[in-house]
Length: 421
Image (tube, rainbow, N blue to C red; front, side):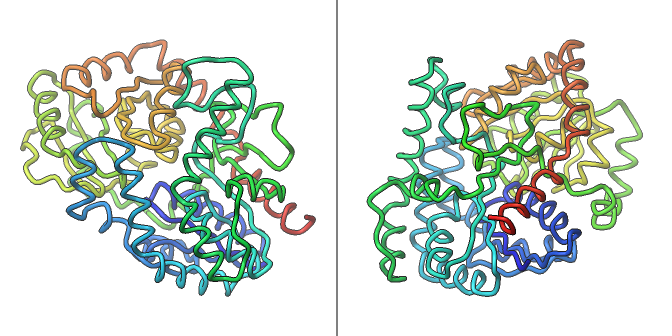
């Protein structure tokens, strides 16, 4: 099969698709990944063909407007900004999607690409599968959507998902129908998610059932597969061990550090985080490995207990750390658990607060919303995360995740869906 994978967002939205592409390629399929132009080198480093989509995700996050909104730490503002960028660039973006999809026979996409990709798939009569790396938004009686977990009974639980879907439709309705008209398709009077779901499209949540079990009242086309992880031999071939000699020396010269990193999430209020890191260094003896990722830090302290770098190879470095402090992205969460690291989630937006709540519920870490973060709260959270009971739970969940066959399950589900219908 000739399959195209489409994603638009951060590296956390992309890396699981690298695993999926490799899994499908190993089964003899032709696979191309399409994402913003800044991920070309990363994807092609795994020998996966890359077809760029218009835009640059890191530039978008680090623009003046993007930085101002990140600094506010207000999730709704950030979502509005994200949809505004998609709206303002919709013409070249649509062309890049259409060009990419025209070259494949089958489509794998996620929710943020759905308004464009679903229309092109319908126009070109191509089969589409949906994949997600976040807590499910499929209605169930068993539990409410994470942001609405104030009550817990069946009709309320299902309602919370309908509210979230309506919220998404409100943001994308105008642009979705504008593009459908452009392609000669009928406009939608119902929610796009409901429209797609009525077609029994494969809806694959690539997260661990050890963290969220599959509801019994889901229809058969909704599935939880397990996390998608790049196979170890592929990780080694791609990354080798890019840990610098300087970092290796620093890691070997003292106790295990606390890992702090927010990846491509982006931290706008860098002054606040610089102050917090400085305070942790002053008030404790903790060693800190700080990965700046996409964030623009200018005046981080110079301290023997602080090592600053942009990125690290998680699989090489995390085993040498004792606690992971991060934003709550599902990919990093999976990496923490694979490496038996208790965690502190500092959540900013989208699904991150939900993952924070799940981590606390499973007793594998601590959750602090970014707006409420202080140095004292972070110091206390790091201490709590090192408790024996949390370490025990992390070891238990980590063992399950290391042994689950998420990639194999996802590849099998996609092959069965595309081939057998």
